[in-house]
Image (cartoon, rainbow, N blue to C red; front, side, top):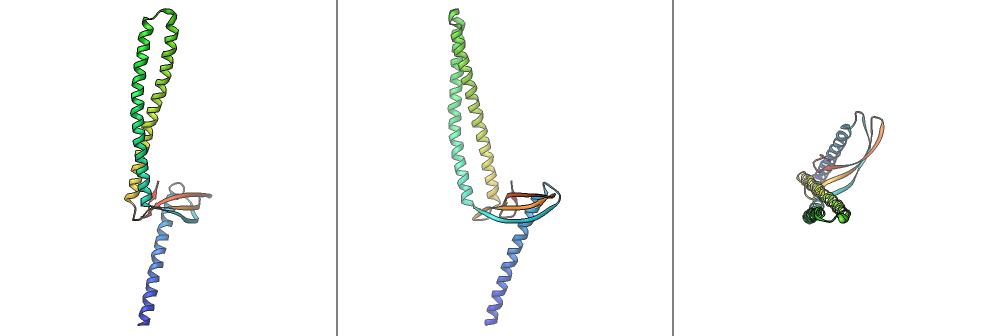
Length: 184
């Protein structure tokens, strides 16, 4: 009976070590493939696990990003309304300028110029908000792709990767899914 117990403990340890070595080999293979996508001659110097990112952290990032998108969308609608109002006011100034006495034309020109500057500023604000919303939606899509390759409770790992590539020493932080897929 005691021999059976010792045998089962040794067998369990052997399985544990072999699975760790398999995981280690898979990580090294993924890191090598990533580095070789940028060069030809690769030599691993060292690597280490820096961080394990939980699925809940990625989900929190998605929620936070969605809240920021909502805020930017509200701001975008306010800026659009402001832009419409600025166009209307500039149009009114142009109409008034056409019917005013010659001595006041320069004043109307100055007002029209000020409205032109405010319109340009509002258009930039709208463009920036649209770009932010687009980039944030891409970020959410990226987070969802990460979650699709995740195994509960870990979303991905962050590895420090030190290696030589074509004779140059390189250092990277590499994101690896739990399935050892490089995350860009």
